[in-house]
Image 1: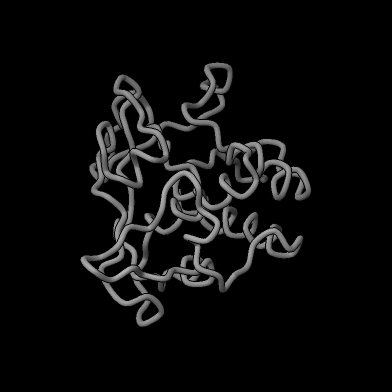
Image 2: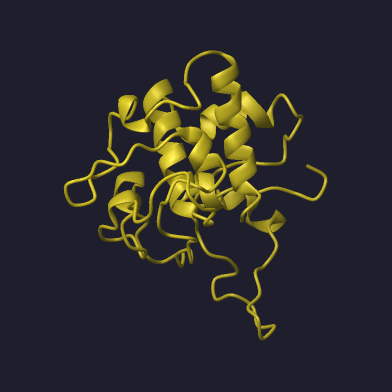
Length: 185
């Protein structure tokens, strides 16, 4: 799943290269669908550079995924920790830029920035910016996996060697964990 994150960051860097976003600007300056909330009376200033380097002080390290038979949350529900999200809200709980802390929640904030700035769905945007230019025709950020591709997908396994019930989990947290890909890609 975590291969999703560097691909998302590469897409972000393509937009930086085009001058559409600034690595060192406060993300709240460009967010329209959601904003980094204050921490008590302090409003954190988070940058894309901090998000990409896992130094933004953001919470939620990873995502457990969802069984195919349960509802999937929207991006806003993931960020706010609202039902049906199965993780807490993404928040700043340490000073940005001070320490490294792996944060899948930050990658979800990155996804929101990219969607808000371009007004395009994340999967479509990353296809144009990264996957197609690299010839990654067997990769996609489709969640849930389209039925026509089920036969090509590997079955996930748990630490005890047993198969994941339903073969795999769904990951609506696209930028953090939602990439389907192949060894060739």
